[in-house]
Length: 84
Image 1 (cartoon, helix red, strand yellow):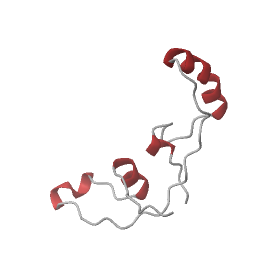
Image 2: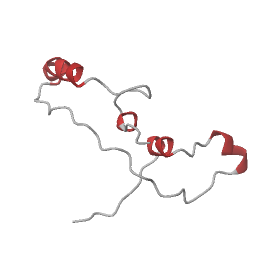
Image 3: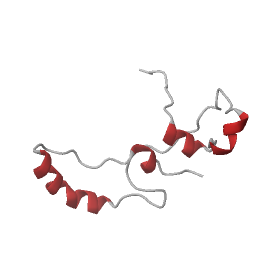
């Protein structure tokens, strides 16, 4: 299953992604409030496979520490080596 990363990057909720037309319609209002040109909305990359967690949660916290990849992506940062 490929999950949306919009909730990870701060757009939308778990139930869906923002409507591109709605974002574009909001751009002039945001631009007027902010006072500078805005870039077009981007579609974030799909969530890739994450490496296995390096540490396990202590037993008393295991019930509240999510292990699903999307949950881990929402709460952490996976550093990738720079490839050029």
